[in-house]
Image (cartoon, rainbow, N blue to C red):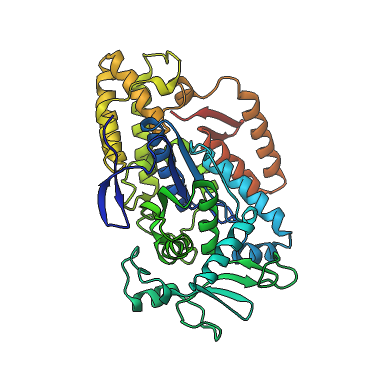
Length: 453
């Protein structure tokens, strides 16, 4: 197997990956804050680190991949209040929605999915360590990390002291010794989540949550910490500071891997621009495998563009791969035992170069279309490694043969919705069917359907 190289944000260069323990690789990735439906930008890290975890499992005998859920946070409190529902109801519903949406992208569950609310004792223990060592202090019911106590603060993000202060958007508070000090623990009034602590009833700050969860499940020092570039500062910078100060002599995360942000029609996604797109809506526009392919067509460190044109291109490329497999039935067996072409493995081991890997898969498809059985097997094995080509060609092009009753029932429901002028529901049904590759055609004689070719 080739050596794995990853771009380490901490050193700002591509490095050979050398795990702490080659018999057990450990990776932590910041997961969602569960207060609303995931948007298409949230799909990027879910897919990127899913591929990285799959690759690591090919290279090493044991991998523990932890991706957390933030289920205590001010956004959650505000959203639950707006909806008039209990916080637990909101977080459970949103967690289920997230699981369903990323599963539609072919994202496998992580080995461990810790929730912040299940790790309050670990958070309190870390805060106590920081106070005892002089890196944190209590003030008016708050506990804050003293950034001046950590000489390497700002090293991960590469920011100067002025840039750190400007970028942190810190709360100006009279109880802070320094404006850049950040909250580890804060008071909770009645009606908001809170836990008993040495500093009174309160709740954790956001940053301490990930330090506590990674410590419990992966140890003081682990191999890879992943997330989006938007998390480098302040979240990851603060994680580094509090973890290294709480556990002197540790390294916390040895390799920091960050994915670039997603653009929508060439610009940053924003509700104010009207281009904010939930993953649920995107899945109504295209099958999950197409969206996954779209995200993998661009290197994880760059910025892919989510647009109708990009969706169409991804669909055409996947069509070509499935055409290449049509004449060669899947022999079955353990997919992990299939031999992935060297060119694909080399590309993925070179800082997860998925565009180059897909290019190598096109070469395999060329040979398979010319009748090469071995090339078809290599294409299928490469697809499995990248979470692609999970269907049979017949199912991809024509769909399952036994779902006609379900489709007809949906058409009848849509007709009933139109009769009652519930056009939003009617449109939603059409969109759901379109996401499954079903095209509806309304005519004088009623509605007929066909599978998209």
